[in-house]
Amino acid sequence: MPDGRHEPEQAIAGTGMGGTMDLGVDEAETLEKRPGPDGTGPGDRPRSLWSDAWRDLRRDPVFIVSALVILFLVLISLWPSAITSGSPLTCDLSKAQQGSQSGHPFGFDGQGCDVYTRTVYGARTSVAVGVLATLGVSVLGSVLGALAGYFGGVWDSVLSRITDVFFAIPVVLGGLVLLSVITSNTIWPVIGFIVLLGWPQLSRIARGSVITAKQNDYVQAARALGASHSRLVLRHIAPNAVAPVIVVATIALGTYISLEATLSYLGVGLKPPSVSWGIDISAASPYIRNAPHALLWPSGALALTVLAFIMLGDAVRDALDPKLR
Amino acid sequence: MGRYVVRRLLQMIPVFIGATLLIFLMVNVMGDPIAGLCGERQCDPATAARLEQEFGLDKPVWQQYATYMGNVFTGDFGTAFNGQEVTELMSTAFPVTIRLTLIAILFEIVIGVTLGVVTGLRRGRPVDTGVLLLTLVVISVPTFVTGLLLQLLLGVKWGWIRPSVSSEAPFDELILPGLVLASVSLAYVTRLTRTSIAENRRSDYVRTAIAKGLPRHRVVVRHLLRNSLIPVITFIGADIGFLMGGAIVTERIFNIHGVGYQLYQGILRQNTQTVVGFVTVLVLVFLVANLIVDLLYAVLDPRIRYA
Image 1 (cartoon, rainbow over the protein chains, first blue to last red):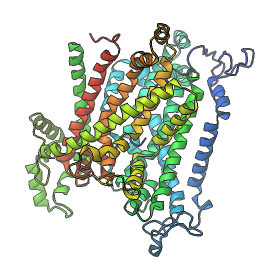
Image 2 (cartoon, each protein chain N blue to C red):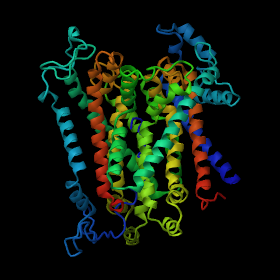
Image 3 (cartoon, rainbow over the protein chains, first blue to last red):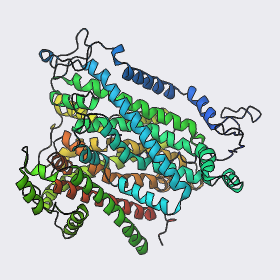
Image 4 (spheres, rainbow over the protein chains, first blue to last red):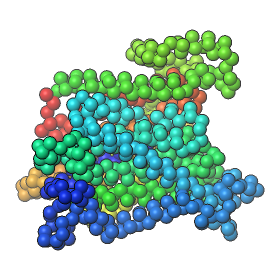
């Protein structure tokens, strides 16, 4: 969704609770003794939440399709020249607005640039912004949220008020105000802006799931045994609280891609000569009558990319949250 | 109840100050308010200095903020650089955007909740899967793409509507823009209602109501829906603020002269007073909408009591 508001289905908190026992054998593989989803009895080798989820995901067609689309997008954003010839910046005004022809399947835009080449090269911007912004938001949001959830008290109240403040500012509006004064034409200001306004969403999720996780008996037991704060958080709480964060971050990745395109469309994200789907859609909108193809191809690519990430997030959520089955 | 409202109003103060201060800092520190006054040309230093003094820009930022907020609470939102009172701009822009938001929320409630109930009651059936896929697609297509495509199809190709809205912006011209503005939230409302209905469908009170022999529509509307609406109401309440702020994109596509249009122009021309004034009002709307939603809980669920 274009303005980065969060998925309201809060049914993901509390994933990986109940019946989970940390035996301290292996820090990452939290052993779990419960029957498998397909009726395999408790006599089988115990599986962790993660291997359970992975088993489900491998058989989920939604996951397979979206993962393949994302893999393709990542590959063409790393090596766009593998499936294109020519540069996205080579344009021939005499061919402006022409339709599809041999060697140029998507036709030409208002400046006579090849729409196919520009659409392929546009993937790089979107994927880079999406991945880097999500990394930044996840790290900042989950660290701050986990600290607030774990320590509680004053720090928690202060953080909750700060997240309230950020939630009260409409995202597109904040983007316009902040980015309109920045002249740099790289992806970094956009990423920085998304991290700045995006972390409260993740920190809320992380805070909630850390609060749920820290009340578990095994955490109390570890505390009673004299475990330090860092050990409690990293070994006992984090592995059981990270699932909701991953789900929300995956879905958010799609919305950040959409947000970058929206900001570029409004003229404050990336600016030409950068190549971005948002810029192309914006440039094509005045010629919508004569050359709709110049608008439709980048729009389609953008929608498909966002859809792939949101579907991936949905599939991961279904796999990680057995309660929804 | 009264004490709860007072406590909530008190809690709103730091959030309000924080959000407006943040925007104030963004506009004043990052931008150069004087640059907008001289248009495209560079201001000469003497004029710049005089203007800075006139607008109080030579004072420290916190003092500027305090002065500004003091003025706002006496109803003085300042003057835009073209000499128009900001309140005058607001009185023309807000009615348009409020109409647009109303239409969007109506779409969300009518279509979103209906689809959510229908799919929630038929979980796993083809209708459910179809609507669910459709909501995914709607969520994935950014609003500006939906808007441009619908404008192309309905306005340009088929000629059902006027592609751009006149400056009076009556209700009937705002139907399509309202649907575009609502589209993403509409999909979320559908999914949220669906999850909520599907969850509550197996609850004891629904079984009791059916066992009592109540007609089906009464069970669904009075028992199931009423209990399932709380998360939906929360979402719609929070959405009011987002819709009014998010109208920037929709208003730009359909050339609607509302809040989003004024903000966009204000930001591009670095018109500090306009931007800060409009954002202040938007933040207030957002906070009040959230408060009303919290109070609505008690109406929907009598178990919730505010001491």
